[in-house]
Amino acid sequence: MTSKDIAAEIRAYVVAEYLAGEDASDLTGDYALIDSGVIDSLGLIRLISHLTETYQVSFDDIEFGPENFRSLDAIVDLVRTNSAAAAA
Image 1 (cartoon, rainbow, N blue to C red):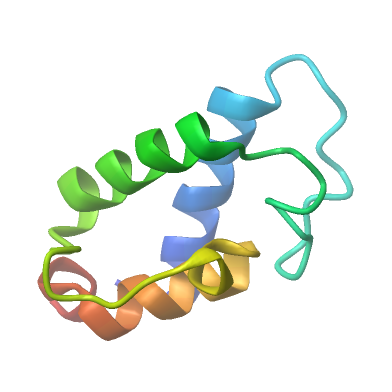
Image 2: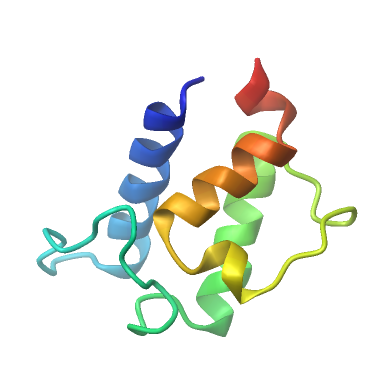
């Protein structure tokens, strides 16, 4: 799975879960998801659950903080670095 594929899937998830019915044209790879309020603390938990199920990312072993979820690009980097499914 390429970074582009991962980015497209995660963007589609964010749009469907957090921006349903809203204009998502500004949602670029570097858009500030947390700072803009697109993803809040509960949304972050849901996103982590999605990433765990979709990409087999184990967050038990990852030291993570808001910087890993600040943008789609950061999330893709996190998944690519820590996922067995993304490497396959």
